[in-house]
Image 1 (cartoon, rainbow, N blue to C red):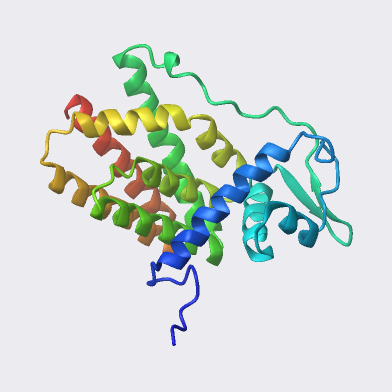
Image 2 (cartoon, one colour):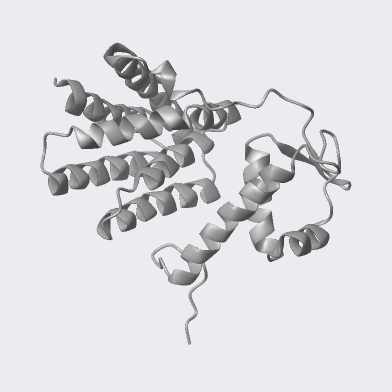
Length: 243
């Protein structure tokens, strides 16, 4: 009998992978509902049973998606009353890639990531919960698994960095990561396309860098987490522009 639980550390089963994908889909479905009739700012969301039936998923999967919305500040829980949509807030819209107009812009953006994500990693080391640590580890494992099957793993790479930002205890780090996702995606792709090292060597190095960030956050060493994240991102700068 298979006694492993979906999402258990060390058991990257097909079932757990499917559950994570389903959770992502439910999150996107809920995002589409926010702002529509019945889901306006300050509106109370339907109960878990009704909402899970509407979306065609189990209540545990729904709770994962709702937790993500809470972390992002899109919904909040009022004890004894239910879950409510946050007051109208300016939504962070992805900035057009046209804002990266030249080489200087690209380098400036990567250096900005060093400062912002280095601080996010340091804060995550001090503020992360057990569940958030679990999520950081899962994202790192997914990245490595994607590389192992020949994927470019760009989305998994972004997910790892987002997991660190979400664990730092300040939702504006995560909101900024979401807003800058197009530039992040573009810069990762460009760095990989122009990397000077052989692909296998480069990928192994990135995996080691991710692991260093994770371990520093796990042992709650803020200085080491900041250093590991900055070293990881400056590696991308050096691959593009040289030392």
